[in-house]
View 1 (cartoon, helix red, strand yellow):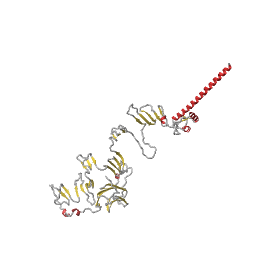
View 2 (cartoon, rainbow, N blue to C red):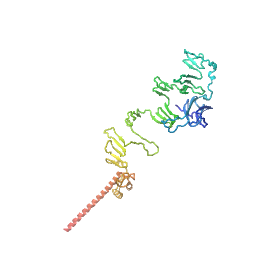
View 3 (tube, helix red, strand yellow):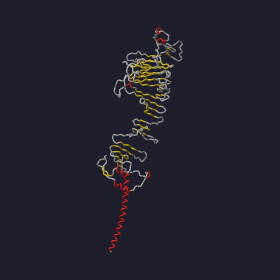
View 4 (cartoon, helix red, strand yellow):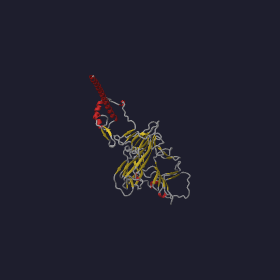
Amino acid sequence: MKKFVLSALACALVAVVTPVATAATNTVTQEQVGSVLRWQTGFAHAGATLRVSGPNGITETKFGSQPVQLAINPATMPEGSYLFELTLLSSLPPVGVNRDVARPAPEVAQVTGAFRIQGGQLYTATSAPSVTENQRTGGKATPAERRKDQVIADDLITQGSLCVGLDCVNNESFGFDTIRLKENNTRIKFEDTSTGSFPTADWQLTANDSASGGADRFSIENVTATTIPFTVFGAAPNNSLIVDATGKVGMRTAVPAKDIHMVTTDTPAIRLEQSNAGGFTAQTWDVAGNEANFFVRDVTGGNRLSFRIRPGAPTSSIDIAASGNVGIGTASPTQPLHLRRTDGTAQLFVEEASSTSATRTVARFVNNGDVKLSFGTSEGPVTDWETIAGNGGYRVSVAGAATPQMTLAANGNLNITGALTQASSVTLKDNIRAVSPTALLATIAQLPIYTWNYKTSGPGEQHLGPTAEDFHRMFALGNNPKAIAPGDLAGVALGAIQALNQALSDKDQEIKALRERMNALEKLVTGSRR
């Protein structure tokens, strides 16, 4: 349903709130002052809602004080009949009301009525006197004459049409009418005179309001309860409500295809509105659909579309099994959440799109015990892998293996059951330069070496080596002065080994030369003795 556009109506509907004195009685009275409708209350209300519907749709205005006024500009509003519903709440509901605890509901007063705009004029029940008895007779009969009632103490059969009302005339043209009610107030009343335990409610079929400016309507009224449970207004379009031969209900369609079938040109919807009359916070939801999506709208929360389904979504896009398992892309979910695709696109994607950079937890798994993530393949040979996190550390292993292939302890110790391999291909490296092993060896000679233990492990676990700060300062390797890459340690050690090997080779040559000189001297000494 299209909404009123207030700017287009030159602010035709304006809420005016001013404080007034209140009476002690729980009453609501309506008065008209020029083009202003005003409702005075006999109690101090905490809030009010005014709804107005007319040729252009429906609008809603909320008020927080009293009195409530509706300023109308007949010159800019479409001609026709308008309906209003004013709801007043005597007290605000308590915050955090427990639904399971019985409590008195806040006192509510509700006023409904109509006004008409015709010929640039506003007409209401207060703008002109109601139809008087003399006006009602139209001069056709005096009260004394109308008191000459006829009583027929037997069945009355009329083999023709029947006209009832002050405006019936001689030679009335009935057409196909069997019974016609003809005057300016047409009513059929069912007055039940039963007594005792029999039902006694009186009912009435009412056509149109009696007051000037009232609504064109057909209603079923409970006269005894002074309620109107059913009304059809005169501007209702064709097939506003249809019940077909099978019991299907159509709204704006004569051929309902389902139990309830609604047809409209723009976004058929169902509104679910909880008022605060029962002591709970007011909340309104819409369930609707159109060419863009099927959605649930949080009207109270700023018209947010909390749930949406786009046209073309495949079967079982979301499927809840009888077990409570939820399937995404499958009608037979085997786990509480089961995602399945057959086109190679199955994946989980968690995205935090905040413009503020910060460390955030985007996924968390909690269990009363170790948490296990399993990775499997349907391609043989089948080897499933598991990652397990818990008090025993973070472990990675082949499913069912007695010893995990990798264990990362809480103190930072990492244990693996195989070789640790670091990438070192020449294809992965830039700025390759030769290093002097002799210089490395000289630097190593100045590198302090300690025994120590990690604070997280305690003194019972001793280690040997340099500190990262000394290593980084003396060799300028790595990107973290508080850590040493195993490959850098190995590279420094290999360079030192090369320098030592060269030094040993030089010593060997020197020793060889010395031996040759000693041998020559020995020969000289031995020859001179002979």
